[in-house]
Length: 296
Image 1 (tube, rainbow, N blue to C red):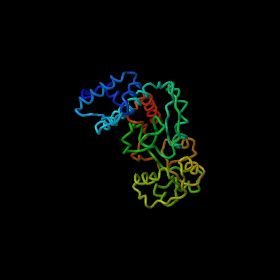
Image 2 (cartoon, one colour; image 1 turned 90 degrees about the vertical axis):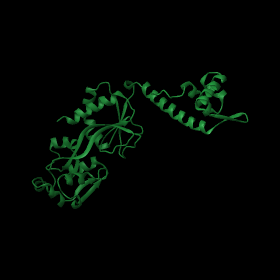
Image 3 (tube, one colour; image 1 turned 60 degrees about the horizontal axis):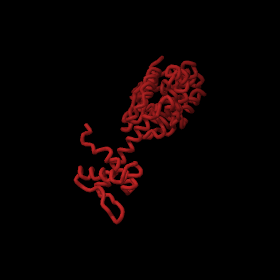
Image 4 (cartoon, helix red, strand yellow; image 1 turned 135 degrees about the vertical axis):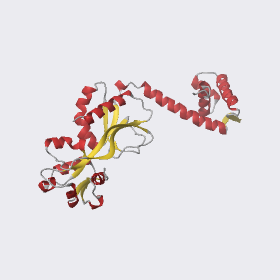
């Protein structure tokens, strides 16, 4: 493996000369002689059987082969530099930047932070609320904790944590609570339900799991964020739908009730990072999150 690579010192010399447009400037940058740069370039040209530079007046111009090799070399050196920089970072000295949807951060992560830091004392997090989704490059983040399902971006390493389960919830103070609590799930088709633009498919997924036609659903007030949706449900304004883990504290306190239970959506809780990110903290965090999600 890697036996057909060009001599790396020669490639480094060529990249500098191609970028700077001068053998002399490349020699000064790399602290070697002009002759050393010239020999390295000649080595590559002999191996390729074609020239990489041609002279025009007193300057150098890349040939078509030189242009292609410069592009390849710069991509390779940029990747090597980025990887080396990541390895030089000492995890204990830098916070792991973790992105989460705001509702997940507020309702699930923050209440468990103290226990997380007790169990993983060497971990330091910087938490970033993400309300507009995650781009494939996970810009500005080391990892993302989210609820989603395949297909995932090809640039990601995805660590599945637990299956997602969602269900309708309402307040005991809802005007029709007694009637709805004792009725089957089909009773929800007769009342306008609260919904959120951040998860427009949630009601459809749950109704299909109950064998009901989502087209018969009547939508009431909509909200941009799940947090507002659940506050409206707790105020008795309607029936909302949410992931079980994000309403469990409200169910335990009696603030909300889930008479019809929760159903799997086919989605997952997942910890996602860019492929190639070898930060050892990610595996430790994933294991902790997985255990926390499985806990009663």
